[in-house]
Length: 198
Ligand SMILES: [Zn+2]
Image (cartoon, rainbow, N blue to C red):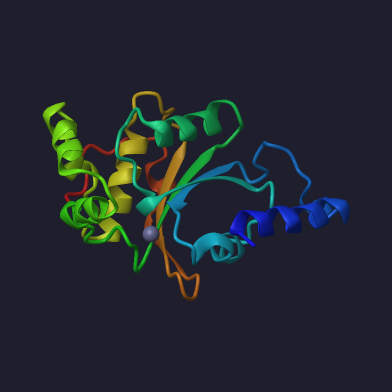
């Protein structure tokens, strides 16, 4: 049986047996928080549990590395929607140790793409169209600095209100221990000027 068939079979029972009842809540975050974190599988249940979050407590946005690669991309838009439309009052960027984005080399991703049937020609066409695939596929060297950079970008975004506290943390994917990298309350009304260097 395929993964999807298994999921659909499980889902039928889940709904029939009212498994959803304990999760019922609203779309507005009770703890008035929006979290940007990594898609790492180890954080799927660990992160909310380690933060004491239950269904309905926070908006959680995930991608590879908890990175904002563009100030007007979908991550930043999600953060702004969480604040202006859904009542979030604090932002928390949570990177983690042992992240797959540390040291990610574009050459290795592109090589894997080629091995999976993506032609060299297609990659060159993108490059020729001005899309810097290599830059786009580059990870980071230090998770703390990456978190600081994301916090800086959010805090200094032209559409971000000054009153919003933007925090930065790093979580251990084994123990769930959090380290506070940027205390957003110290900067809640003061925009920083210097981004951390990568
Ligand atoms: Zn990660």
